[in-house]
Length: 93
Image 1 (tube, rainbow, N blue to C red):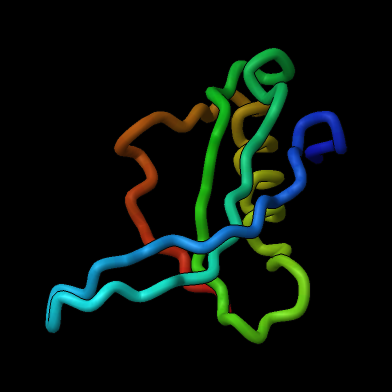
Image 2: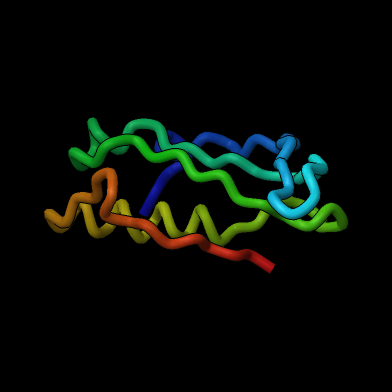
């Protein structure tokens, strides 16, 4: 399991995302999650994940933390993840 030493607190921020339909720019609320110490602990490269959230959400979503915990356990068992291995968009509601 990821301890507090291996998980940085999520950073809430906004991104300007261009719309391909009408050239408008949408401001999107996001949280960025990052690991710290996974390489030293289990040899897994550090990970950064940014997710879009709804503007009316209260608090940050826990799913990315659970996802990092899953990757940590996998790396501990010898299954390392690298660029290009995970190519799926995770939608959090």
